[in-house]
Image 1 (cartoon, rainbow, N blue to C red):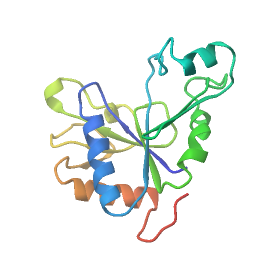
Image 2 (image 1 turned 90 degrees about the vertical axis):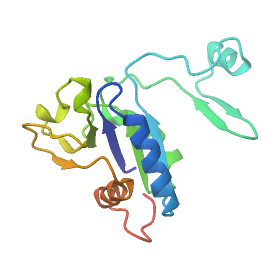
Image 3 (image 1 turned 180 degrees about the horizontal axis):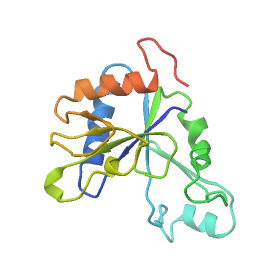
Image 4 (image 1 turned 180 degrees about the vertical axis):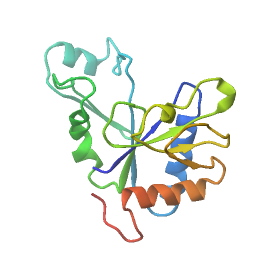
Amino acid sequence: MKRIHIIGGKNHGKTTLVTELVEELTAQGFRIGTIKHTHHAHELDTPGKDSHRHREAGAAVVGILTRSMNALFWPPAPEPSDSDARYEAFAPMMADCHCTLVEGDTKTGAIKIEVWRETLGTEPLAASDDSIVALVTDDQPLNVAAQVWPRGGIAQLAERIVTLAGMGPGSPPH
């Protein structure tokens, strides 16, 4: 599974950039998967509903199949919470995708692109993290080793994602 992580501080525009990239890349004919990473504990299933009751009864994996959406719920493996191996559980579902964009996870060893806005008053993560490949911003950051990519022009950003993920025209998923 080819993963590119879009990272950044709160309200810097991660979700907006991910959705714009998905729209642009799918319009170009690519199949794109997404994963939202969060360090918060969330109950993704609805307490009291049948699927939640199945899980509470001890089911190892619970699926929901509807006319409009499917979902699977399973507990994470007992690995360190910052392990990249956690993403492999998603690989079978993402197998037909050319690339998976992950929103978040600054601890990953995969490709990281940061979104940053100076007006929010924080330093870019790229100022202290040399593993960040690029900083997407229309501002002028100081002291970053990463490439700086202008935020305007989603087509150019999508082109850079295609290059980073090795998703040339006609390239098969995987």
